[in-house]
Image (cartoon, rainbow, N blue to C red; front, side, top):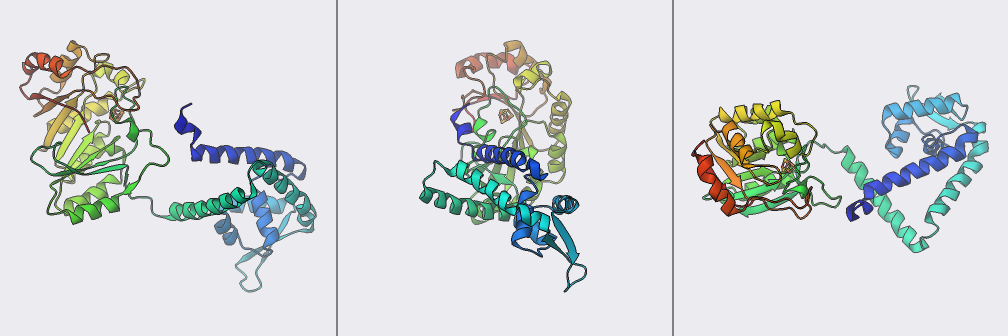
Length: 382
Ligand code: SF4
């Protein structure tokens, strides 16, 4: 296990949750209660007459879950439900004598668990932790209720003049990828750390608005940008600001690609081709490749009137000379094919791979140019 896993807050919370559940379920067995019902029963006991809606809000429950649990507590004789005096349609929940007689035991079980898990933490630290934890709960609740449809990015290069010489570009990186190419140069955008910097689409649009007269092009790369359906509305706004849009994709989302092209959201598409159809699966780190999707993207790009480029990063362990010839032949009608030299990532998916050197690519070039003259060598990637 690497270091990033050992400091994974989400995993820690999950372990704490499951351990707590195991403990409570065992201790509550004799009362026929479960861990899930306990906070609800305590809430009712401490706020006699509370409504279903209040419990749902306090505990962050959805309506279905809370209704089911309240029904069970009622069937077990721990609570009763009655209509409110003030509003007959509203229901109020009360504990029964049965429940009140076991609350002492329940509080004891809860306190023992708390004592056990906090025993080795000094009291001061525990108080600080409780404050931080409550703050995180409030933030989590607010964030979970917000509209999550906005696209987010995980890096932003404000100005780049090399990616498309002659153009002033700004570059954003999306997170996540459906492929696991062993020679991936972008793994930091596939396996994102919990504390990764997140930049909202709104922030990027603000930046684009402020630089409207300076920048020419917005470049969207990743990870795999076309995994994100929210991209479309973001690009609509970026286009409305007058930007040219370049998208870099692995070609596995042909429908999204086609929609973006038809909706005039994109001006330039760069598709990376990983290997020959027969060897595609091993080159993307999966048992099988959905080669028909790759083929469809190739067909879409070969028949559209955008600025289209295909990129190949030749790796000695994956691409023999024959493979490269077959790949170029596959896309020989493309207006532009770029051979990139390989730069190993800081955290490679597979270590010890060897790219073709610039000189080796140069010596291969004449043979490849016999298939199509539209090939060039370009150094490095983003
Ligand atoms: S090389 Fe591109 S397609 Fe492959 S895993 Fe990395 S980001 Fe995804």
